[in-house]
Length: 164
Image 1 (spheres, rainbow, N blue to C red):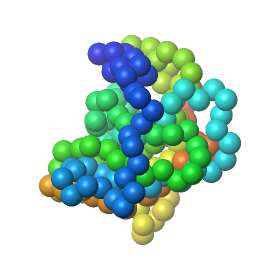
Image 2: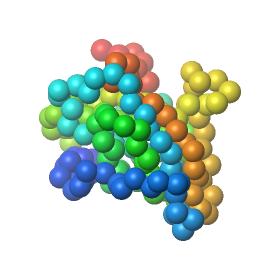
Image 3: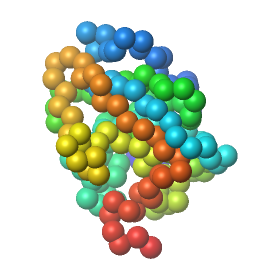
Image 4: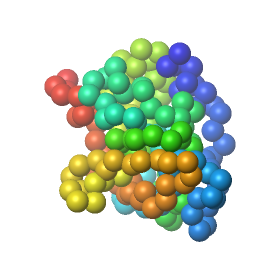
């Protein structure tokens, strides 16, 4: 199932969501904000997608418990981009942009640390070293802004020590 989701992600994305100039539409339920970019886009970039986690992953088994199941892609670099992630109302402990290297993810996710990087995430405004919690109500949650920094992407296993 995991493999099918990523195959669908790789094949089914049409280049991302259209920019929303002035914010999320009032009828939208989910997270909206602006992604800005730093650094040079790696030549090995397959795609970048945005996801949210109800609870911060604490193991590699939690890594694939993201929402939505078919995450929206965002451009790989360029001008700041207005993104949106459709999400049900709820509490999200991690809103993150994930960089994927060219290659096939194993169905069991065993090569996730080779192919995936946390490229940027929404940070706690009071302590920017920590992820920020986002609460989605019955409408749009705007201004969830973050930076995708290609020079400082983090290995996925950095979040679930020890790394091999």
